[in-house]
Image 1 (cartoon, rainbow, N blue to C red):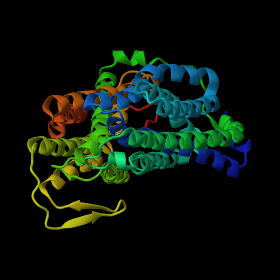
Image 2: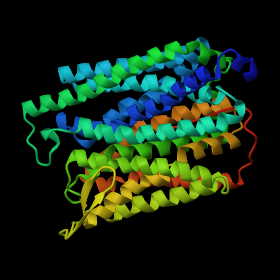
Image 3: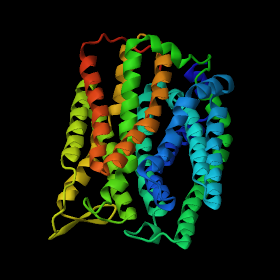
Image 4: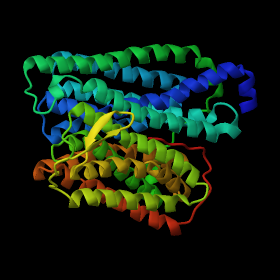
Length: 452
């Protein structure tokens, strides 16, 4: 069915509303995903966990990409885009309800089950929403719709960190040197449960809105012709190299983002409370959002692999700076400055440089995922759909690399030294970008879009 025929089946205003709803999906899964950063701090405090145990929140979430990507693709091919979107949102709602239950019974493993359930729903959403937003509406505007959806994805990420820190980390339990009594623990559980209950209710209402425009979405969705297994891409050299780059990138990004609050709240860094640290960590995602816009403009004039090389050099240098300055002792502050937007007063001490270095990694992270994705698709000899599927499976790096980060932290007692793990990840991506310069390029025959 051609796009012209599709568009005659529904009015432009109705189609525009449907496109708006699908675009909002990118905001939703980014917000849910980036609640993990303040949530890790909340779980670590409430359950008195070490760094590895606390990072199991990310493991439970991102392992879903490895487990559920292929079943999600199969579900999409059999049931279509509308059912996939509704079931994906339903999975997030179910996860929110399980999380609410976990706060009532005070059992950490139940919360991990909730996170896996949410991520399973998000995996199905990602598999469906990327090609869906590209196909809906006028074909010549597909690039605009994809860029807009990426912007909403970045906005959702920033909102996830900021609002998560504001509501998950409020209360006396998260004050510096607080003594965690049963009363404070119960209060903290209540705040966490309230956040996920409100998200669940909002998403249940949104499912109703999607249901109301289901026919318009179905009329404008791509044809489902059967999923190609991502495993077929394992025979292609560049599909494997790209998948490893995605694995390391997502792992490094999540390792830093998830532990950023714990890093900058330390007395030798900024010595501020968890809520303020979380709001300051929002800049990690704000810089990523700004970098994505700036990077998109630069890609009109600069080769993707060149920009990727520059970005990885930036991340390696920032991580190396943090590692080499491990154990810095802050000087006595004689003045301070206020960070805009989050209204956090930051003392001007040596530790501020380390905090800013970690936050600025977000700026260089911004273009990595889509650039690695496109660079791989242009060089992989496997079908684009299979290569894309393998790259989505590789997002599972977000489950494993943060555990290595946390293990180094627990073994050395230093979050600064743990930055050697993402630094190694970025070194591989730097090699990948350099190797891509001389690799043969071909036209991508299938429409494939990815986002994180």
